[in-house]
Length: 304
Image (cartoon, rainbow, N blue to C red; front, top):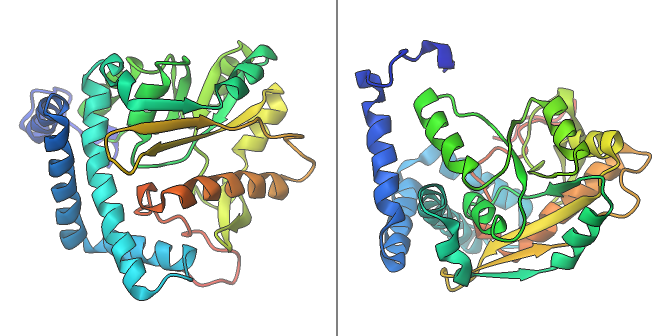
């Protein structure tokens, strides 16, 4: 639904559920960690049972990505994915509503020298991230070590969008609408670090088809375009919730060599290979609820 269809005043009754949701997020942010995990798990399990459409999308994605797993293993992974995303809601509330400093003891870093080396080139840096359920927690913890700008998709609900952007401004420097390429380029050329995640399906017009988990997936060309326009190094970033569900690991990998290349498809394949590498470490934490294989090559039937 378009933003213009919402009432002008945030006091309108239509926004009352949004205010309740925002209040609930502030409350959740201050709960004990163990209670957050418990609540996130049960929210995830409730969604797994009730949100059949997303469960179907998730099951389809996982069957395509992990055909070597048995049907029982795939069903278990679907369930674990919903649990991880439920916990991710608790993490987002914590990241948005509390100072990240209180989480410093929960994060371990690897590969900081790769980002430092990329920064030292003086051309800005493009960080390539992944849409994990830990995304907002990752942004908060990343801010403890390096300041970065972030590319995001504005929310359709204007009240929630205001809450979300104000909360993320506490973590990131600039927030850049995903459609605002000029601003993205300007930030990078000024020497800043910009974090974006190129692993969703935005349609045929802005994409090329490249391998992803053994399937052709529509992959946006923007990584190549930004690198070509700015000359900035492209640094892959991994961020995961550790198996104890209490600590996290941030890992910066070496900047992609000879990127961009001469072929956009090869560039997209390299980006997808990194994304796949990150997902395989903790597959349940990825946003499999998204229709990653929605756009198909000409002549192929739809998957979902």
